[in-house]
Length: 254
Image (cartoon, rainbow, N blue to C red; front, side, top):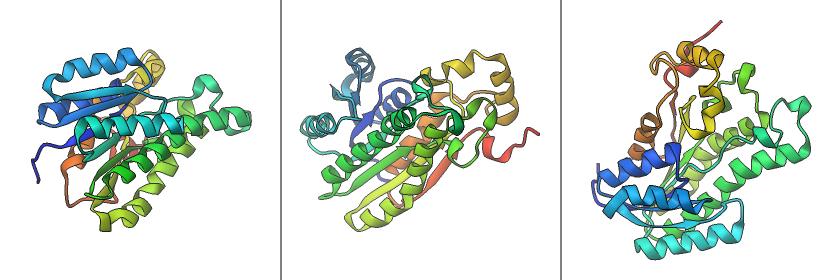
């Protein structure tokens, strides 16, 4: 596996994104952080030390903001060799939930947050890496392929994550000749700020202990980050979706 130093863009500044940035920095790579909040970007970048190439505040649902942020990243890094796309999140507060209860506004909000952000991130990644190749690592969810109606029925989120999973092979096929690898990690239930509701619910925690026996509950952000980091440097791997789920997909709770 190629161990050269790479210039890497990571979207997001907390949870899985932060754990991934720290692991990549510890391996000697240089990171540029793009996220919506200046305080989160600054805090994460400060923990990376010499591994930080800078950061930009951008809402990746906004096209012009995404284009500008990636241009700043390319200038700071000199060259973008990899993009790890983690930004997204729950739209439950915006009305995401059961299909029969959802408004079109809630549907659009969930897709914008989770799928439009991925579209713009992937597009800018490919545009910047097309001349020299690189690695795009996307983030999906086990809920795209292994749903759990009780407590986890957010059908807009599931649709967005299913689209990302389904996008992996077509993008990998399209850009393999350019030396761009496209892979996806599909986490299970992870202890992150997004999962705060679940982590504070005793019933959900007990469910996770049964559903994710390898994690004995919620996964850590670092466990998911390890897979994202591996895809960055796995130079012979493309078109793969890897579930990091503590056994979620193979464990029945019935």
